[in-house]
Every structure is written in C-alpha cells, then in structure tokens.
Image (cartoon, rainbow, N blue to C red; front, top):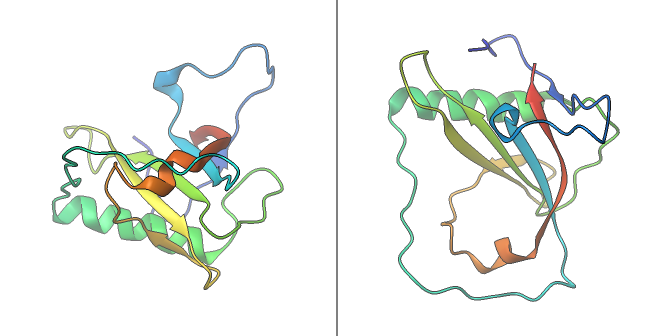
Amino acid sequence: MCNINDGFRLCTCQTDKNQPLSPSAISWILQRCNSVLPLLHRRGRAVMPRYNTQEQQLQTLILNHLNAGSCFDFDYAPQVDDYLRIKGKVSDNTPEKWFGYRYSSKNQWHIDSSDSLAGWKTQLEELEKGKII
C-alpha cells in the first residue's frame, strides 16, 4: 500500500500501448462528459457508498492533493464535469474502495456524492487510466 500523505502522482504507466495495464493494476480512471452521447435515466435502487471515518479522512486527503496542484503525469486541463475515480484503502488489512471526484465550475475537484444511477454518468467517456505512484 502506498502512503500518500506527502502527495502522489497519477501515472499512466504505459510504455507500450499494445500491452495495457491489467485491470487489477489500475488504480485510477479519468473520464470526461460527452454531451453528444444520450443522457439515459436509469431506474432501480442505488446503494450509496458507505465510508468509515478513516476512509472519509483518506477521501478528503486525496481531494486536498488534487486541488493543491497537478497530480497527473500528462498534460491535462480539467473541464467542468470531468470525473475521476481513485482506488484506495486505509490499511493493508482493509479492502480497496473506489472514491469519486467531480470537477466543478469553481475550478476545483469535489467529492462526488451522486449515486451509481445518476443520468449524467451515462455520458462519460474514458480519457486515461493508470496507477498511483
């Protein structure tokens, strides 16, 4: 498990595009909203993610680092509604969880509190993904 107290880099870590990262190695995914795609309203019951106190602290720590400066290892200018998912865990004895962040019109990342059935998420397209270093 990597310690991010002093910051982190979101690395694309792909030296060869023909050999992409294995799904288990991916620890972040950056997506962008494409308004050309249909906005689908999904139905069902969404379960909101539940985070304990330590996980909430980790989520806030990640948010602070995202807003402190560029964490990306490639040229990237965030746009409103860009969506970043980061996988993390609070200790070696706990399971990994995905934390969601959405870029706002206030030029900052915010913790995403929408559920998995939010219609705008049907318009997301993947921009990049990789590992945290």
